Image (cartoon, rainbow, N blue to C red; front, side):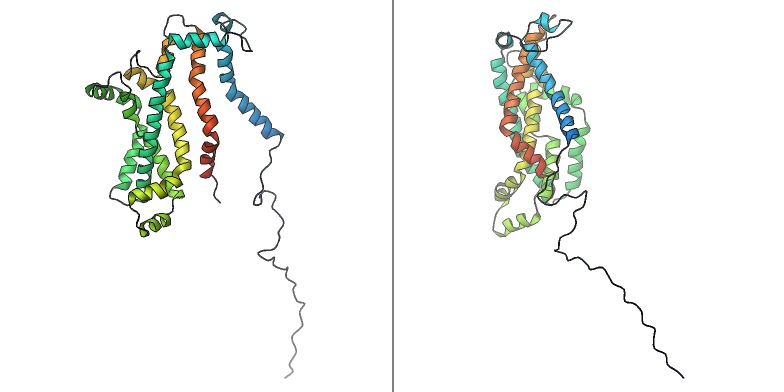
Length: 306
C-alpha cells in the first residue's frame, strides 16, 4: 500500500485586524468627539426666515405703538416706527392703571412659579424614586387631569373662591394654580433619568433623612429642569387672562385684565392697545435675557447623553 502525501495548499492571507485603540477612517456621517456640525447656507437661510417670522409681530407692535390710529388703520400701513411712542405709552399707563396691574402680575406670577417648582419637584421625586402603594395609579390620575378642559372647573372654582371670601382678591388666582399636573409629570420624567438610585442610597448610608436628601441631592440634580419649568410657568401665569378676568375686578386687576380695559370701548384706539401690549411684553423679554442661557442649558442637558 502506497502512502501519498497531502497536496500542499497555498495559505490564505487574512487582512490584519485593526487594533481597538488604533486609528480608523472616520465615517462620512459620524462626528468625532469634540467636533461640531457646521451649518451650510441653507441652514443659515432657514434660521434667518424663522428668526424674522418670530420677531415680526414684536416689531409690528412697536410700529403700531408709535403711530396714531389713523396711520395704523390706513390702507398702506407704516413700516417704520413713528414719534408718538412715549405719548402712547403714557396714555395706556394712565387709562388702564398699568402700574398696579404690573405689581399684581409680578406677585401672582412669582408666587405661582415658586410654589409650582417646590411642589412639583417634591411630587416628581416621590413618583420617580420612592416606592409606595398605588404609585402607578396615582400618577395615571395626575396625567388624566391634563385631559380635562379648564372651562369645566370654572363654575365650581368660582363658587369655592367666593365661599372662602376671596372674590376679587389675588388669592383667588394664586391658590388654584399652586401645582400643575404637567409640572409633576415633567419633573418625574427628568428625575427618572437624571437622579441615580446610588446617590440616594449613599445619602441614606451617611445618615441623611428625606429632607436632607431633597435639599442636598435632589434639588442640585433637578436644577436644570426647574429652570425650564419655572420659565414655562412664569410665562403662562403672566399671560393668563381667562381665569383672572373672572376672578378679579377692575379695581384689582392683573396686567392682562387691565389691557382688556383698553380694548373694551366701542371704538378702541389700536395704537394705545398696542402700547399696552408692548408694556406687557417687556418684562418677559427681560426675564428671558437674564435667564435665557440657563434655560437653554436646562433644555439641552436632558437631550444629550454623554
